[in-house]
Amino acid sequence: MSVFSKIATKGKLTLGLVFPLEAYSGSIPKMENQEQLAKRAEELGFKALWFRDVPFNDPTFGDAGQLYDPWIYMTHIMNHTKEIALATGSIILPLRHPVHTAKSINSLQILSNQRLILGVASGDRPMEYPAFNQHLEHKSELFRDSFFTLGH
Image (cartoon, rainbow, N blue to C red; front, side, top):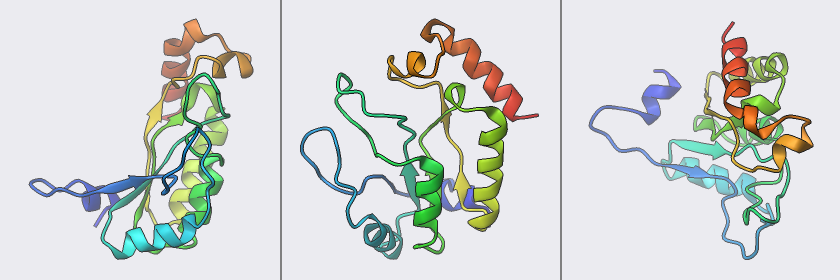
């Protein structure tokens, strides 16, 4: 059974959780006890854990998301779970080199025993592009080029 069929079955509702698995005030989560919470989510029958790609905290955006690199964080949580899908929601393709992204995807897919679900996006925080020496107005073209390069 593929990981996709575990979370998307016709006529069946499945639920996943977005990291961090905690309630917090302010914009920065504490990121405590996430391993135990991931294990508990798996025990309770949740089908996926979703990891956001947030390069850095933008105080004007209002939500830091989670604080860790998604590939490293997913690998860490993978080592504390057995079957639950590990999903990116979403990797910001234009701000990552396609070769490194492809290597990360392939590595995690193999090491997790095919539990990775890949979501990709162009990013939603305007200050990220200048920080990566990219132009926000070229976001669509950068995403398209990264997407097609990743696929080849």
